[in-house]
Length: 315
View (spheres, rainbow, N blue to C red):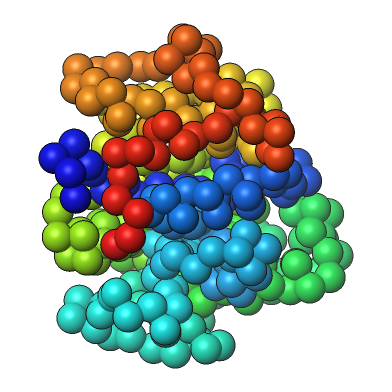
């Protein structure tokens, strides 16, 4: 690896960040993510979604990087990926032909807590299928996959209910994370704690430090964004819904999925130019002169080949 080379890992939320918030569309992003992978920049899903949802989405994107599921409750990775041995960190289980690291509390414990302290609140797992279809915009097998949870229980809480159960949850060793659609009851894990495990595993493979670009759009992404070397906040519903305390912060102008491309492009340009100043809050509009590159006819967005030139192609 050349002296100027660096290893980069992209950790991304899904709903509202990689996928459009309203209809879960991702446009031509599959091609972009595959291109990143071919250049040695893995894209790690770091999401509140379930293992079943993430496995299906990886098939659509055509990639196979490890995935952080259910707000850090578990880490899923392909059993044939011999680069990683997470068993040195914690216990590995098998799940539908994938390996799973369990970091969260069991669903049965979460359901018992909910039944004891807020039984009237609708939740994604036990409430009526049709009601959750209306709330999520999902249906059929997609909604079924979203309800197959292992480590988290998304709830619909009003302000009074939230105030009542938040402190009680903490007393029992749980926390409640705020996403775009739900308040999620879970263990003390979060997206950042699981990201630390994944980053360490990648660093061992690389034999060097790994720079993390973290992308998110909601409050439950804040600690993940702050754990990254560059934090990218993707605009949703016309504004930025989270304000992480980060030395390098990029705020996109477009929502997902176009905002994801904006944010990644801006972050890679910052890394490739070794801009080491602190407390940089960057709107992607200000990076247009830095980011101007030939347009790809296949995808309709700028080519990233020049940005990739400092990265190692194989880990």
